[in-house]
Length: 355
Image (cartoon, rainbow, N blue to C red; front, side):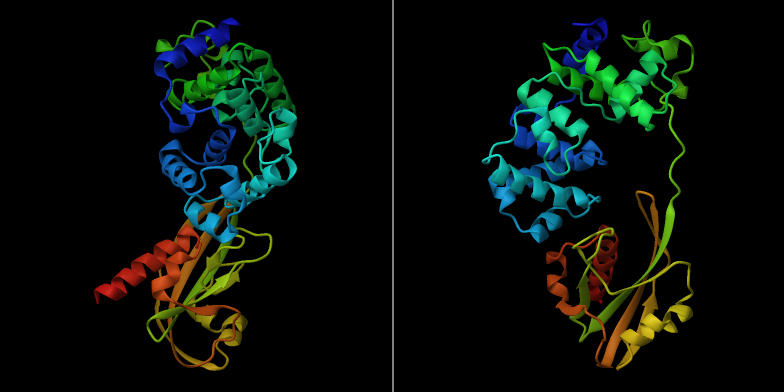
């Protein structure tokens, strides 16, 4: 075992985090935890992990689940394509692998939503195979230890770090090494203000020796964030119902439910929305009263900045010309709804019930 791996594993034995998915070598459980923790903090993801495993304790149960139920359980985690990919991957396991998770790295890569990192994590932890699992923490540790100036997200950087990490994985304990470097990056070699003087790798870390720790990892410029302006119509009907529609197409929140939406490419004043072609089409045969318009609500997604406005509308008479359908308020939270809309409706419904 190389010196780097020895130091990390020794540190991990004394300092590693106690996490529920580390108490098993079951590939299904490890897979669930890895998918949930993509783009999610452990503090938030742990509760979702417990709920998911309780609802779908094995891959067979998940494979037979309804997509809406999976999305509802996932609600609030964001990046909903992960949930849809999990359902698709579970079906793959049942149909292509006779209900058993693939036992090879290449086999794991065949599953929907499983990339090199996830395949490496499952292969090393569940099956003790010598494959690297290179997440953001591992990239930070390796880039600092070797003072690598190649951007981590570049094509050259991805190849370089993948090869380097693979070389560092000890055949004796690949799973423990991968978990060790993740925890070391999360707890010791942190993004900001790492405690380098107390680090057991300090005398070997080139970034520390050169006094350039904060220069690593090197990153390429971030993609430009796209602004989207969404005007949601909270249409009340007889005070106990509202209109709800299912999102379709290849866009954010696919197959989830939302309030009827008028989207614009620039910010509009409320009076401009009320005069818009979309508004006139929706309420052409209806008499309505606009009770309130919310302040702007900012909701950040990956490479998207949502500027949301909610229009509380009372339908007085006539019909709404929209594919959305009226749903009872008491049933609204049985639907998988984006967190942005759920937060607004929760507040509005509580205020209504308290009046």
